[in-house]
Image (tube, rainbow over all chains, first blue to last red; front, side, top):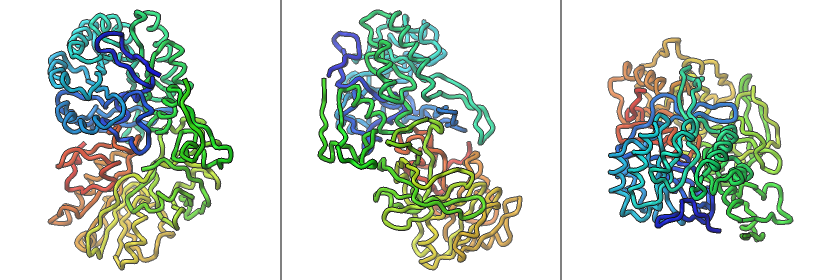
Length: 305
Length: 253
């Protein structure tokens, strides 16, 4: 299986499976190496990176919600230069393409990032994250700067402004749209009693983003791939996005709650199957592909399609 | 770190407020040491997740390891568990506590939280003839200690968080471990440090350790929710912790 997740052209990006982790969920490198088979994923998207180092947010960073969570980390990262120094070797060893998530902090920063990334072959593409408060002109400027980098460019649209910004983002040269960033929200932290602002994750996000993907699919030109991202917690959730018009999906915090779910979704959409051994005991079978996977016990596994 | 299945083999009520669950676990978890934990979530028949509430896994510190495949955790009695209940466990998480060589006297300070995260160290310490004092502060004073080993000296702090002979206790202690409630951990640790500094002239490095019990979303160092700032740069509770030298952390929030 080969999936083209950017518009056709000199720098188009092809993946073997239409499933990726969303930025911010799998770390910068191979943090999940003991829990996931990276080969089954289409690509890895790094945690968000800025040119300058960013410190973690102070105060509460996690608020449990009914059936979800609100997260506010402040996007801590050591800055692009150090991220490259620290993780380059890890990326080179990964069996799948690495896409770097760049936080859209300003056109000069993007230009600076471009100078560091242009000759860096281990980075297969860039995902640019746009802030919720941007207007069309600002988005156009940022994406234009990122499009000048000689790499496939995915642009992650902000949840609340996705429809408004999409035309400007495409006009500026985005190769694909990621729909969308997790919605922003506010919730009270029961420990501190304070209101915390952050991004909301959980299965309830999916119906909202799924509708957005469907509408944008009808709105934007057919050759612009859309990658669905939001609330995916099962293979069926991912399939729903494909049915709505996405060419690929990004799985976010479901990986934290049940790490093997990401691999399971990737196997499902990538055409991999694992058969359960006929005489397997209950605790020898794990639908989320734990260490008791049938294939490892002599059962048959294979790839279809 | 592995993702394994377990089930509740036995449930024992140990006090008015707490019960202990004996979990039959994968062998990889039976070698856990004091300080290490697992992320647990209940799973249903056929090992599927039926609902996502609560969304994240719970952080469980074992309080005893009985044999090669039974670990014991302590949970509030108000929560309902059933023998045979299936669990998905991620672990072991974190690094074991580092104890000083020739440790003779150890002080455990427990503030607004049950002492669960500190209990696994007790059998080894007591069998090595170490003296253990546990000071209960704030709501931790309500914790019923009758099921803990008799050799442990239990001290109840006053409302101002001090206790009689506090200066002497801190002076004798070769090492101190502090566990605080999840409501603003950094501030609570800062409160404890202030108390200690008021009563002890010199607080050396590697003397007092804070044990962080923040809820962990990923536990593999990917999400950065548990990131702490120290004099040596950023640290992650799930990878570098859960115990950190409190003299090295930046406790201001």
